[in-house]
Image 1 (cartoon, rainbow, N blue to C red):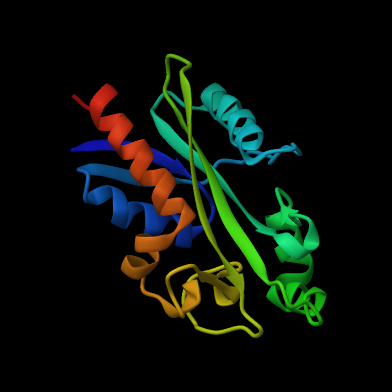
Image 2 (cartoon, rainbow, N blue to C red):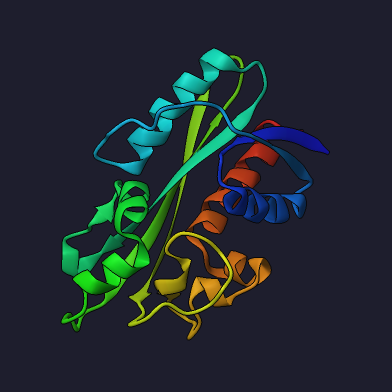
Length: 188
């Protein structure tokens, strides 16, 4: 078994990653470092900058990720500002912004950076298309999960178990891509 750190203060993200990566023989430990999330145009830029900061603090391999909800009718908003927007207006605010909008298509995207003590940073991404529900549904998950319905499902992420969400989610796609690469290149 290989063990790496997952830098996040979000217990929900950690549990999703832990459950998925266990299936690949990769163990993760949660580490909540005080890294200020930089402003950037893309999720990839955000995680790369965060990974560079983490490399200065750690002497162990790690992953760090950032996700965003991109809503077509809002020109991709909140996008890279998803966490900030969630803190300020939450799901209710997004639903209010979309109250008279028919096209509720959206996608979730994750950028995940893997870093190791020698300074290498590798970035992986995952995306899931879907739509914004007309009301909050479900008690599970976190963040925008109660309002996001992935293509191929009638349930919001908040109505799914971790295992069900990991069948669809943007984060799970990035984690699978990472795990395959890690086992081939690092975990031999």
